[in-house]
Length: 239
Ligand code: C5P
Image (cartoon, rainbow, N blue to C red; front, top):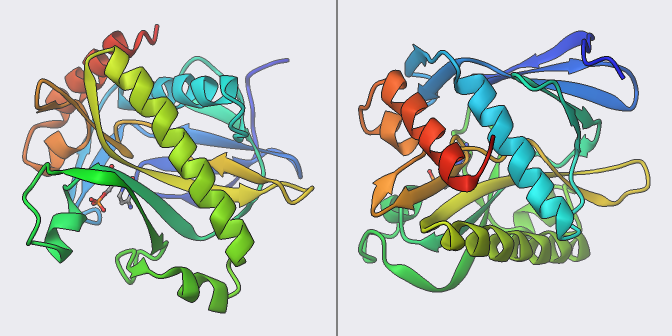
């Protein structure tokens, strides 16, 4: 199959473009851009798109080996992946192993990097306008975005993903702090993991040092971020 996928541009975000190939497939293109603070800080980051695509392909593949259904179909070896088109649920599912980021902002009584007694799962509404607010499961059910049963299934999958990623990262000497997931439904109404799994959406440390987008949020240059993504790929065994 040729990997010169083309299609209509249906979405352009801060770090990705999405094209519709046909009813079944989309192409996600990872941009060579890095942004933080809702786009207030933005820099060109040559090679970042390919590195983030490679991370997504590798980690989706790893999860797939453990039976986690996900949207990945193919990779062009560069910045584009072919994915299954889904009916997306407009929520972000965040799993946290350590206290960090927006958790600390809303719960200053817990010290930074305290290990939680169990992984925390939280839901945020995907809305740039509202800055992705934290929402409850009741909010999601009342808005008709998902049922209680579907949320239970999402939480079960999120915890399983955390276990798989944690084990793999730990085997490479990495600490998995937290990460963000998105889900959709396929034509048979199966829950499917979607979007990306990269340094943009996962916080991961080596000896206390970030290998993820937190570097850029904290003032490092885009060139240093790209170096960190290269290091992450090397450590994870991504060619
Ligand atoms: O900022 P916060 O602590 O809520 O982020 C938790 C995790 O979710 C981090 O790994 C972050 O990279 C990820 N995240 C994301 N997209 C967002 C918000 C958070 O990938 N819009």
